[in-house]
Image (tube, rainbow, N blue to C red; front, side, top):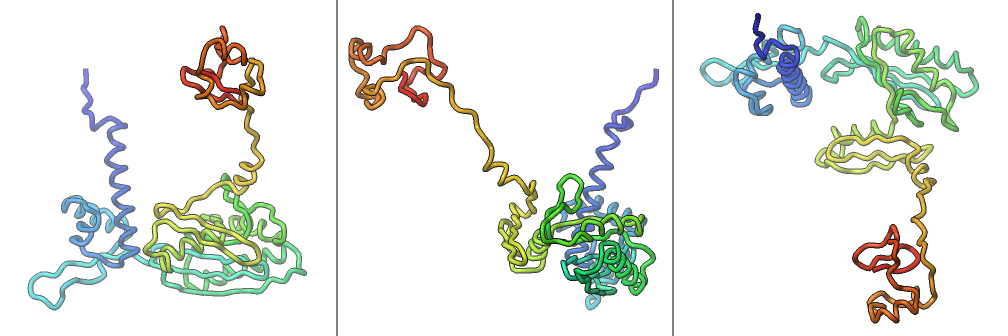
Length: 312
């Protein structure tokens, strides 16, 4: 009989790979936010051990995600620490600002350096297909000007409601029809790219959290006043999303009524406070407040109000 070691099992093998993926993502996020860092700085910021950081740097370098971009401490004597940075041209991203009167597009690399910008006005008198064709052509022209072979991700910021399940634009009054057709058209013309859609108010909140006035705030609300009114909520540093119809559904919800009391109600018993009713058994029987043989569903040991009278 062959004995299998615990770490050879598939369930145990997934744990180290998951930890490595989490560490890699954390290091890449730090390199993107802070810029080039040394291995010692990565160790200090991540809290990982020195061998783990060395393995992480070697793994990301072999995969082509980071590279040595310089040295730290060049003015002092002795060996200098190497600075590691993200390979900026490994992938390219596109951002679309979709408005009712036009589209603006921006192409950047992985570190956020803008490579190309373009915009085109779209009038409301043209049809849906010509408007979609103008927007898609604008994206293709910006990608060519940036010198990118293909796009990794296309992010679209648009007004209106976003379907939480499918991530598509919903039918909204006052918005042109070509907004909803644009997402499918971009996915057809750019099959290798991942196309995502987000509400413009949520994107504005993320921008304020990263680069704006909310950089030192973990919890805040952004109120958007434009053609319409919107709001974005950030709690504990994370953007909170929810179904758009939640407030209306909560307001129109109907709750079941409490169970009716089977005992008769008298005006005197209803108007007398419960401490004054704890008198003699004869008085309680005369007012209809005597304890029933079958206990009411709302009756407890302590006096309780079931909605029609007191029980105790």
